[in-house]
Length: 572
Image 1 (cartoon, rainbow, N blue to C red):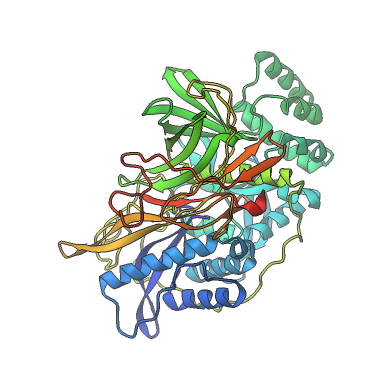
Image 2: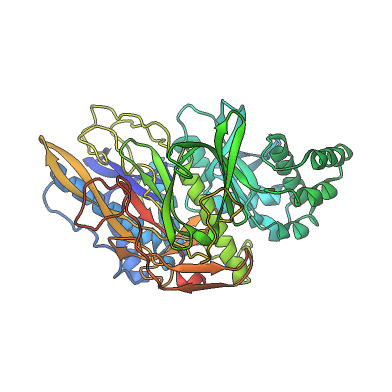
């Protein structure tokens, strides 16, 4: 998960006005929480985990805080939450998830009422389930699976997504997974309540098409796969030949769903997810187009002329790391360090409105590959113990109404001038270039060393790793205001797993480790999508780019907000 404390705002209770911290997770407003409640979390983490590798938790103050001191505390709390969420043991436990879930409930003063929640299929039909307002995503998914009579063992082959209606294409587009630490009902009805159209859908959550054999034996699973495949075919998101399309149309008209799916799974890029409106720096700066991600590939289509595209397929094994960054112009960028050819390692940059979602998809691809390498399986209901402790978090009543929804990559709204609080990267009351959406995420992975030149369009594959680097931000005063100057944060080492941390995207855990200042990269070579893997501890120096480089901690100027993520040795 990508956590950022976007701003400090005012709330009130019977005793008066106090400060709360607005926490954004994966680009969406999640909750407002006060310092004393974060202190309780820190104390619980100390009781249950080794927290010596986490950054220092800011101490209590007897007197009120100045603006500079408030900003310093905000940053220290943000850094603490980021690295706590990235720790492998803390991230895999239910403690932090239950805390975030109850913080969301307190922010919106949610009661444990039973409500109707509409969940859509890919054919725009829907089913309505009875859920508790406070149910987390896994609870809701299991209730949906039971309602539609999906075989229980197949529940987590699917996942819940938040969709947004796209006016340009006149269709619904997934914008991110529903995460286990949130209430889908609360996020849909409160955090995403910005006048735009959103919904919750159920879609497949796996990449390896060999799972389809088992799923086709269950009527509901077969129908879910069938309607999603039809939507992909109608949306022209598949590389199907005219002959295959004709055969699929014939099978569709006959209602031969099993035969349809058996043929569909042979179509190149079946099951890939398409991300539109990207700008990429390879093969040259400013290339535009779209990409598709699936199995162990990321396929990029750069536009050369109207309806004419050049295709580049990136191998997972050749990605050393990737990161998501919020830049000074408020755009969001995903960059990955890629082995173009032997001894030629370079950064490739992608910007677009769905950068966080793309990073989550990459995370999911990697996690499933690791699971298959270790001969694991997709989880089943009951596999994980839920943390049901009560955090006793009181409801939050904001003094001012602030725009809550701020999805990564979308234009930010200026906060009310009446608000007297700090935002990330700006003076009092302005918009924040750095922290709102996600901390940037980078993953580190190994590569195959061969002499192939990958600078030309080829059919190469792509896999990535997780390594999360958190930037440190210095607080300075300029003309009487308070500004944050970004500097480099920590990174995670795939080979050693130091400072190892876990992030979840689409139900998959991400391992990372913290190293101060620069991104450490290890090597992971994969002979095939399901083959054996080996890792080493070789650390390679990352090439520095003029406005996009990773610098030492004492060189603060000009660095965007970044978090690096990698796969730890435990996973390999």
